[in-house]
Length: 209
Image 1: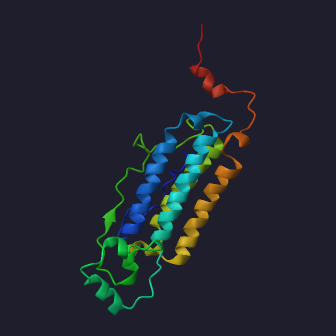
Image 2: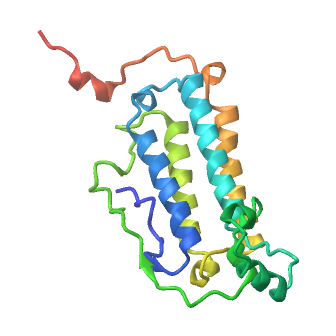
Image 3: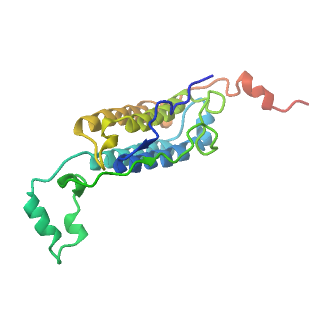
């Protein structure tokens, strides 16, 4: 029996930034595992490949935002900004990082990972060679699960909202591996030529007169 691809994930921790990124991973995974294209041995078409690459970029963007990167403003300057009644949230918004990087936040409350990762949830199945004959597609989803697991195992899971730059580099490396799959194995140009489209294991589903 194959090991569950979520094995090793920590299921309770404080870091809201990690929890938020996990929800994006699960949303992406749910959209992938329902695709009939992954039942094809040859590969998948350009439109799906573009979607996969775009979603990876969105994960990378969130990863950047939860990476610790404080402003150079002093505490006095930040407190003055907070008391400025003419200042809006758009003035505080930082495209590089969360504003909570600039101040010591309250102790976070530990929250559970809310999804059923056992494979019993039909929206979060464990992929097998039988239901996902495309090896590259299965490797992609498995890699996405590894990204999920490793996020939960970071030392920064005990922080309030952010992760360290070194941890961000490690997580980005996993995303880069997944992006490489889309570029080297995904899309119409990378499809394999398949002579036997119906495998022996699939003959049981064919018509018998």
